[in-house]
Amino acid sequence: MQLRTLWHAVAIGSAFAAAPVAAQTIYPINRAEILEGSRFDFKVEFPNAPTSADVAVTINGKPAAEIFGKATTFMQNEEGQKHSALWLRGATLPAGNYTVEAKQGTNKATVKWEVFATTQPRRAKNVILFIGDGMSVANRTAARILSKGWDEGRYNGELAMDDMSNMALISTSGTDSIVTDSANAAHAYTTGHKSCVNALGVYCAKNALTLDHPKVETIAEVIKRRGKMAIGVVTNSEIEDATPASMVAHTRRRSDFNDIVKMFHDVQPDVIMGGGSPNFLSKATHGSKRTDELDFIAKFKEAGYTLATTKTEMNAAVAAGSKKLLGLYNTGNIDGAFDLRLTKKGTVSKFPDQPDVVEQTKAALDMLKGNEDGFFLMVESARIDKYSHSLDWERSVFDTIMLDNAVKVAKDFAGDRNDTLIIVVPDHAHPISIIGTYDDDRPGQLLRDKLGVYADSVPPNYGPLDVDGYPTKVDTSRRLAVVYGSYPDTCDTGRPDMTGERVPAVKGPDGKTNIANEKDCTGPLAARRTGNLPFDANSGVHSADDVILTAMGPGAEKFRGHKPNTYVFRVMAEALALGGK
Image (cartoon, helix red, strand yellow):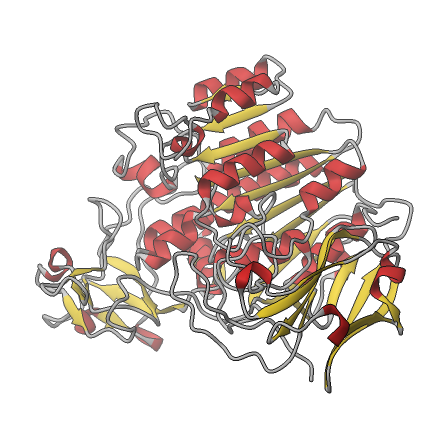
């Protein structure tokens, strides 16, 4: 009986439902694609805690230890639980096809792996991976309308991410669920392995501790171990958050921020930029979120990093020729483009000199481009997703425009040299669509009266564009009607919130059930909507829709048709020729 990864009950801060295990479970899982020479933890779990004499594990018909060239370790009643486990940490394999068979009495489990080689010579000197967190098709469409304009059925320009040579549909599901989260989804890009919700750099086994699950090597670790390429990680979320953490982290629980900071220090990407400074500060420091006395600001400085806490300091570090940069520009997430440029809300008054994703990308490229062996740069526009959770589509689309401007910076850098692979891809989708336009001049007293569909969906009249392609006025008389397919009880005014990020729902009198935020329920056009999510939800959720990947440069031609998200890792590894014994 073949088994996939199963949910299990472990104390990791989330309520997982226990699942019965009928036979042994093997990690890596069935159909895993493994980079030749990359390191991974091999584990087989046997239910009912058998002894080593009662089980047998073979690979291509030979004892596992013989194939790996290393002795395995057997643990009966692992961690006091009612199962036994066979382990080999840090395993590697040469290229080839492998069949793993685990027997326990009359039960047999079988998985098949492909360990793939990468051809020489190396095709790409540099790889730039842009992740638009939660960026759905409607985000791209709305960003094109707002930033390029629309006239008689044609757009007045293309996004930088549109004008790329190759395109593919990417599916994003994990091992345990159809709809993924950002950790598991980003992990697929940075490791080439599928995993489960909340996991980073690990398979989800029965281990009780979040850091003990079977690990798989990240692309940053492979690069650091095998060569002299530089690495950059840029985001406008907290740097410990799921997508940037996927470059370095190995944990079953994505909220292990203190451990993730240590993992960043272990790997030491050359450029690290985002928010989330409190988890770098020792427990004794005011504002710290650490539970220990480790001072990672000091540790990074000792490792040769320049610390930047503002855009001014970031640019000064670049101008001074710094080779390593730790940029921490906010205690939480960096503010999005809508608030940085238009409203000055969020935390802009507290952090008035935050760089946006475009400015961070420019700085990162200026620092990394001097490396003779090339670089790998991951850039995330994180708040596309966070604002969609808030059902705040205008802010989400402004951050899509911001991502596109960063892509243009990368394309300008790549120029005509044909040595840089650029990939633009979401980690997952949101259920978001454009269904028409709201027009204040339409008769009626309800928001739905103002909605024009089909022939009545007349073009919006957003204000003139600034030099970077952002509308300077969005609360206009004709606006896009953008709706979400998942929501708690909430209210919709059909207008942007100029006072700050939307809060769709708040706790009701019982302290458990979420109810509509009455702030959005005032005004003549406010529409009250009965939610379609469970009552404990206070925001929108992800969707399982395929996402659109666009790419250009050496290796981009491999993107076509439909691919699983793990394929992105394979293309990057092949372009950089990272495989090898």
